[in-house]
Length: 251
Image (cartoon, rainbow, N blue to C red; front, side, top):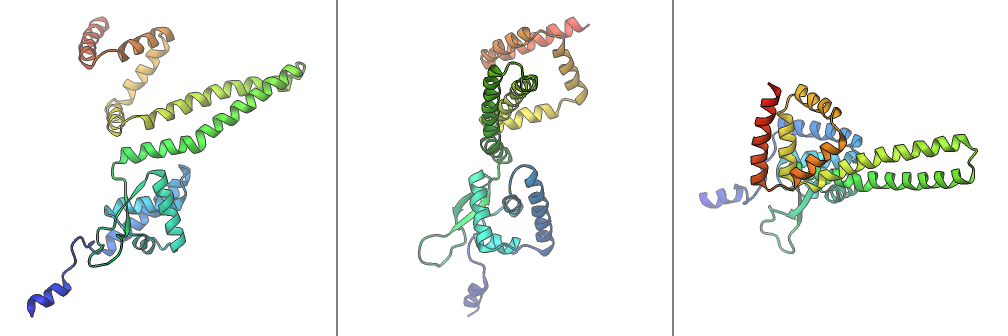
């Protein structure tokens, strides 16, 4: 009798612990703040709120659990989850707490736990949705300004606009290319690069930037291209050799 009663009140396997009110209040506050910040990233607040809440819960949740926690309607929750999934912020998994039910397994959602992975996806998605269209529009406008300027060589205002568009397009292309490199890196490569940068103090970074100003572009590019063709073993030897030479020259 006792064992039967115990079985009735014991939580089923994989049951999600009931969140404490204090922890849940903090999660909701974080989700709300993340939603406001998401707008600055070009991500809809509802999508950012869903991602932040799932990140903070650290467990797969069903659509119902998400919408009840965040106070969303069924439609709003479904749309936010679908969009967050398309952005690569969350992923769909089998419902882990489907115990003793018939029929096909339900769906649940969990945040992509590797922060460098979802960060790279956000950058890639923003480039696709925003960066690439802007570059295309600027290219078309610049080409049109050049063509019209040829037909109206005396229009000084048009000539100034043509020159500005040409210069601005170069800037946007450079920025767009730099942003486009981020998603091409593996998450661990991106993490290591930024971690190493974080270990270099600001004064050292600024000295390197100012040092580059005194070098010819061709010399810098030749060095970078040469280094990129080295094997890891050769690169380690070259790094040690260069470090010794630089310390000797700096004395």
